[in-house]
Amino acid sequence: MDGAILPRETTGCHGGRETMQEAARSAGKSESLDRLLADYPRGPHDQPQSMCPAFGSLRVGLRMRRTATILSGSACCVYGLTFTSHFYGARRTVGYVPFNSETLVKGQLFEDIRAAVFETARPELYDCVVVINLCVPTASGVPLDLLPKSIDGVRIIGIDVPGFGVPTHAEAKDVLAGAMLRYARLEAEQGPVARPRNKVENQPTVSLIGELFPADPMVIGGLLAPMGLSLAPGVPSREWRDLYGALDCAVAAAVHPFYTASIREFAAAGRPIVGSGPVGVEGTAAWLDAIGAAAGVSAAQIDAAKAQALPQIAAAQQANKIEATVTISGYEGSELLVARTLVEGGARVPYVGTACPRTPWSEADREWLEAHGTHVQYRASLEQDLAAMREVRPDLAVGTTPLVQAAKELGIPALYFTNMVSARPLFGAAGAGALAGIVAAQVRGREKFARMVGFFDKVGTGEAAGYGSVGVPRDPPGARERYRKSRDAKAKAATSQSMGS
Ligand code: SF4
Image 1: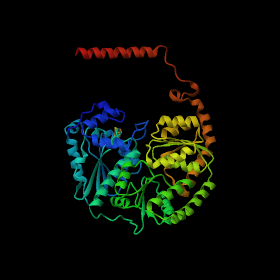
Image 2: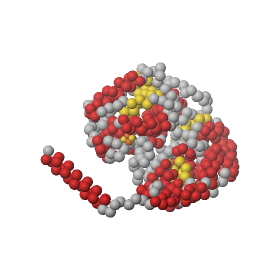
Image 3: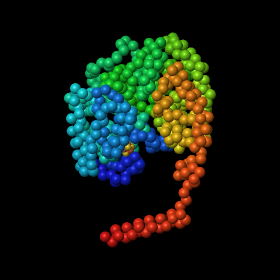
Image 4: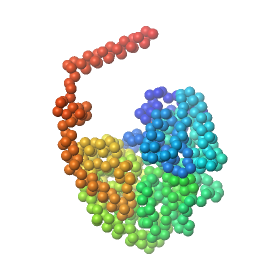
């Protein structure tokens, strides 16, 4: 393997996507890159304004039993990724194969990764070892596809997850989930495989695609029961053998609509795919119809499921009426579903922005929202989210950290999507009640926010923050100009010295 030599200033999140892609292509990664660019298409906004995308893949590996995860990337990236994993309670070791310019360029890094994989792949401990190429090793062509496919029965999965190929950490979850499903599907096609731990006998199942709040699968299981359907293990899975159970479903439900690679594997296994999710009365009715039809359930059973679920959802909405204007932005991929729940609950939602791409599996939600006056922005940038929030001046802004910060500066109540909204049930009656409750609590605090803005009004903002009534110190007259001249003179002297030497 010949590693491409990358100029130092290009090797990072802000180093230039084109340069990194070019390097990766000339290092033999065209196929991998083309696949990523097709699965995760760019939009008007094409670079993450969130955490390093590879975190999504890392998290999926770390949350799976008997799975070892090894990172191959720059130390600073690995530091950030391991820090974030442990911040989110990984409690698992993250493997790392370090490199320097020499081991990268001479191909020794691949040999080091190979040795680490052999050392790690112990069948008494692991079902699977995952190796994740971050930006620099991907751009340098480190060929993880040349790793053995299995060692003593331990599966080896190598994936490229560069920031210049995968736009969001949400989609990076799919890169690993899809690679695992593919491996498991090919195993199942070749012969008998391990039995999933909680296999449901003699009942068709539905596999949910997407990382959901823990109560949500139980709620959805209750919605499916009158149709004689139960839940298969979801994807991303918690254990290798669950992948077989997921693939064995009657229907795959793309609740999170951006899992393109995973959906491809379900389709290759011959499973029908249903988009959207059971949110609100209308969303739940349409979803039950679609799931029932895809699973070949009778109209009477579908009606029974609706008769059980819909009145409960309507009652939860009635009991928790939302009277507020809300803007929503996020990068989890469930933004449209959250918006639907809120609109049905009585909220006005003029804007929903998602960092994820438009796919066929969220079309029903987009159409429904647009018919209810919501502007849906796929691949939304922070600037678009901020502009929408400033224009609408909602009663509540739900969004990412910088958006929440900007909203609070304006005295607008704001909620973190990831920590607050994604950490609550979303589906069925439970979702309708939980989301309405949190919106109401925040909107009630509006007065407090206005008082807070008034209180801090006099302390200054931006570069004047903290000076308050004292006023920002002024530069002595001419100081900036004198400093600029002395800097120019020093630069000139340094240039002529280097030319002379
Ligand atoms: S691996 Fe992540 S943190 Fe490192 S350069 Fe790429 S996008 Fe940035």
